[in-house]
Amino acid sequence: MARKPRVHYPGALYHVTLRGNAGQAVFFDNRDRTRFYFLAQEGINLLNAWLNTGQAEPYVMASATWGSAPPPPCGTPGVPQNLTAKAGKKSITLTWTAGTPTPTGGYRVYYNQGGKLVFRAGVSAITLTYKDSGLTSRMNYCYVVTAWNDCNGNGTFDAGVDTESAASNQACATAQ
Picture 1 (cartoon, helix red, strand yellow):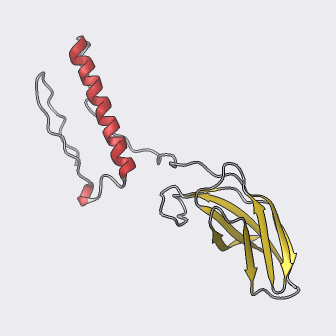
Picture 2 (cartoon, rainbow, N blue to C red; picture 1 turned 60 degrees about the vertical axis):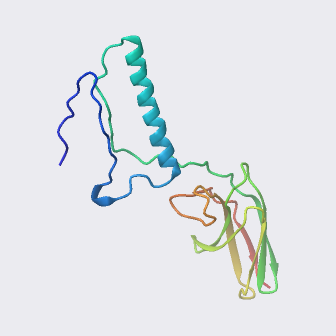
């Protein structure tokens, strides 16, 4: 149930609280806290401008809306380039070059299984090779690689939080 409109009159002091519904968190991380502090400072600046310049009285004290999620805090890394696959004994070694901008999280290697990409492994942002071993001899394997940025700084890939580039070129080889 919504609260009743606040009665406003000159010189009044207001106590504003922030509570989540059913005890839920209002702030999830420091970015949320920083954004709230910025908005509160903007409100104070507008109020001081009104008090000190004799402008018309503001009629909106606060406003909140539900909308789309904020954009990710970091951009998408560049697509890995020049992916090659070299066959070895029951293995295939992949090499590639970093795209621009380089990723902060690392690279994700996918195996192309009948047109469907299946996650195979992840490597660090400074690693530009991956060896897939234990493969079946005389079988053709195809791969693509993506780069990802660690947007929340936890060191692991989180779908929906971290950003992932488009897939690299496909590289195939037949294991020996």
